Image 1: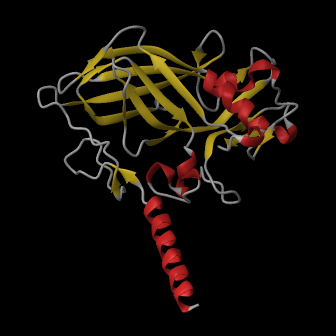
Image 2: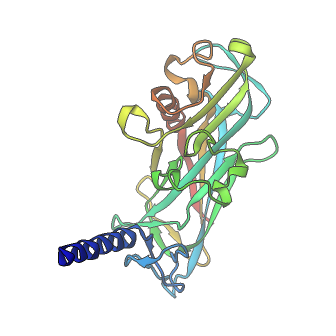
Image 3: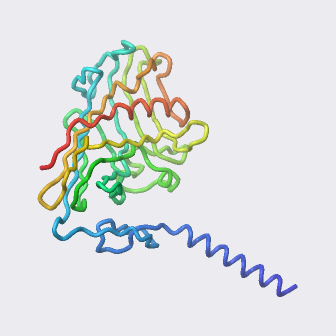
Length: 280
């Protein structure tokens, strides 16, 4: 009996060890690599190193917000009339996450930014943009990114940087992040305001509001090296929230994951269009 009990304990300890070792975050653990991940505990063989002849360059993405089919200039605290519903809408807040940014090489492989989480906050005084340094030199044919926060980070609790709770994009009643926050005034809405907090990542019950966008460079290869950087301008059509007949009168608020949040997040994602790209 004692032997059986001892064997059981040993197997239990072994199982616990396997579970904990499997939970260790994997990534590149070589500080000399361009995709070194200081949070990785186990090397997964993904380390990449810059070509010494090409060096590294920079990717810049500008988010040019527009309104409607005519792409009128968009600004906060300005009243717009929606072309589909004829409702008057004034934005006071428009924030969203851009994450998991990747560049595709001609051979189909991808380079991914490490710790790729950026919060875009639209204001009245500037055009929001983000800059990624230390991109390995080479040719690239497409860019990909996520509008939202991936499932792993959603279940990892409150974090730092762009994912800090101080950004007011973390649900305190439901574990996870608000991917897109759109708020403002509308006379037709109940109480004269609209509040859309869009999030949710689970595939079941239509709650996955994450949007993944890929923009090919129209058959061109953009080169990046220590003297050439890639500049990208995206048009973001804020009127797309209410595409397809969605009305502020019928739904002025969304505060939880679900089908309504997915539909509106999908509409918003469809409003991202590659407008320009070039090498400096």
